[in-house]
Image 1 (cartoon, rainbow, N blue to C red):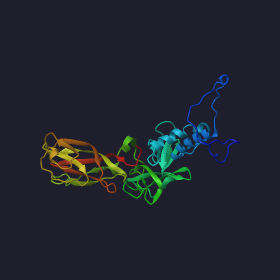
Image 2: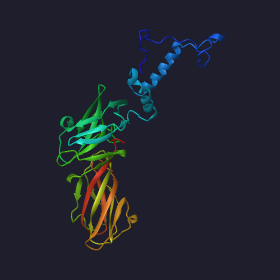
Image 3: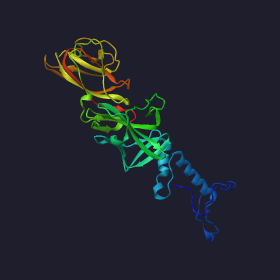
Image 4: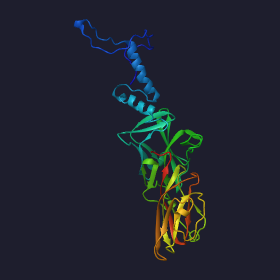
Length: 339
């Protein structure tokens, strides 16, 4: 919606006349001497100004004609919190090639992004391509971060090895040292320097379809000995991950024991032979080991919060020796990815 723009429109608003008694419109009754209500410039100017105030408050660029039919609705969604510019990110990420990823529309044909309190309604997907958009040096087994910025009213994309500021940083969710670029998610570059295939799900959840060697950790025999304290396991994840989706599987030497997983820095004492996780401080996931000696398999699946995103890790404990164990990072939750 734009303001009245025909040849008879004035550049400035007329002085208003004194307010009268409020009332209602009527078509009148000419035969009975009851005139129809006259449309006054004051009323139309008030109506125009009220509508434009909402549109402007929502940072929506007004459009004349059918293209602006949703200007007011879009602005209302922004103003009432259904689409706050700073938090707006409506779309879903999808890897479309070895080095390409798109933010695709959730519904209809448009993607919505808010950058520095300006609302962008982008027609069609937003596309990142490693061949043209990389900032930094590509390497195997590394996280990469997706950015967009407002470049004179046009969305400008970038893939970078530089992580955004964390929630307690100078400008949360924007690129460190380049705060014009908003982070809209991340991707993992595998050992072959291709994007690891993944599903991007609600809640910022990213699930890898086929984890590669950089996301798999085999523990040594020394690691698998009886433990009376928690052990720390560094893992590979983007710095924007606030939870890791993990799988641990292997075999135990006896049926009388368990494996427990917890957040990095978990504390407390593990009792040898214990099978009750309630006695273990900070245990989040666990598995009792069942079966006869030499063939007691176990598996644990779940999410573990990440306490230090810059150096992601989880803690694990074992109350009986294990023959072998694998940790596989199945995915993560991205704090700045599409919700």
